[in-house]
Length: 308
Image (tube, rainbow, N blue to C red; front, side):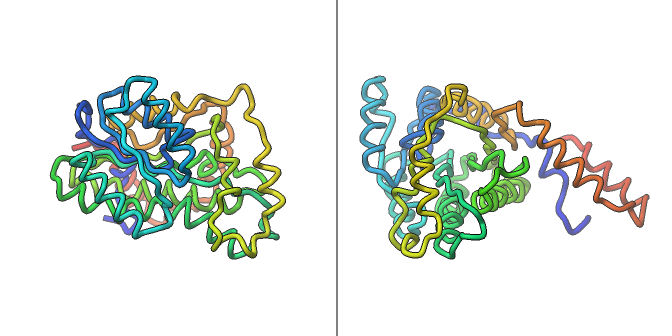
């Protein structure tokens, strides 16, 4: 045994969610963009879904969409600021009251914070980390004990970003910091939660057509007074989606497949593989030769052990 955990965390573990029809899901940031794409695909797969979102206008639009699709009976909605832990507790109470259980937890809510790290303030760091990372922590702390107590298995999906793997874009230090932490959090939970028949997946999306660019306009007041990114947020809010960016439904379909297969990594855009290769080649090249080759070989063999 070694101090850095088991490579079992990174191999395919047997899932418990092949049959999803009739199960229930809770999706944060579920009223637009990738969150809505995931919610729509889950509903089509037979799940009942609660979508939670900080924006009331997005919730109203999403509910109208489900109504037009004839799926309104499968969806409930509520306003939620993912940085509000008391609000999360109320959301969980309402989810269990209306759905009866939560088998799939999707921590998707996020903000597209961007700007030079040299002008970032504590308000900027706190907002970016509290929403993008803290929101997922709050979701896990709130829902995981209940999911374990159900004894019905389950799955947790966390939306990270390709910024967690590839060299991060310029002016994305805060965003990339949170997204990398989300990937590490999901990897670390995998082996532990397998004992409870709860699988995990980390969604690592590239460019999608979403409203994340508008997040700065809805920054909570407590994170706004001393922000160094006001000008950048105004510019970002006017950015248009590129025609080649992907449809959020595509991400939803990939997430559904990952839940069924208990697939750890969900990477949406193969075009960025070369960037990851450059990064990982650099990491591997930085490893010194092992001091104990026999131990290194033994550790290496554990990577080929078949899942239980």
